[in-house]
Length: 267
Image 1 (cartoon, rainbow, N blue to C red):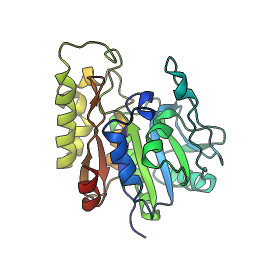
Image 2: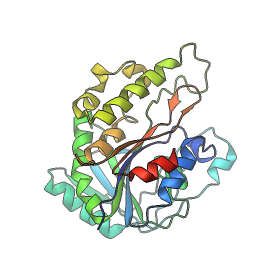
Image 3: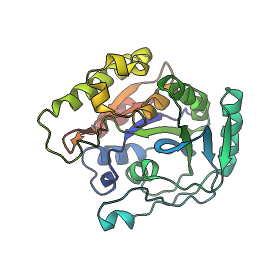
């Protein structure tokens, strides 16, 4: 079986569901070619728990875990099948890697999962489950979680870290005098990903320009490290163009192990 890719997808705000921008069509093009994918596993900042939980719901509901947005957003549904058997395998896999995990039989899909998946796989025909981020996760431990999930790719399972490349919601939809800081941070991350500089990506708080401003809290950055951890040294590392929304929310995303010709067509 061909190794499935790993992805980091910037989902920005929930409005990405209604405003595909630059990234939405690129994701749709990529996802339309996932003929060999057997299931999708998503790690999102919107499911944080004590320890790691793995969603084992047979038919996960669409969770509208946000407020103050247009009514049309709350009517959207994304209802793929779940994967309870795969969830059990993941709990065992994580345990073998020294990461204690337990099943959750009730959790639906939060907007960090279903919003980007509406673009990536609008048919909702592939089984989807989520793995939570622990409240106390560090960048190094997020990377380790991704590494523990990496063997899933050999089974055709797409591993997605869904976050935001920049995520300062204090500046969301506000007039900012110096929005270029967000691009500077996003460019730094893109360069580190292209070089495969894992140490820099983990130590981004000390090394990246404007890191604290780009991420006042870390939870939307950490899924990137999950995706990097799930990558292989021989993976092609690809930038998936996303542009900048609301002036300061970078939607740039990354693929690990995507086919070069597919990326050329997506750009």
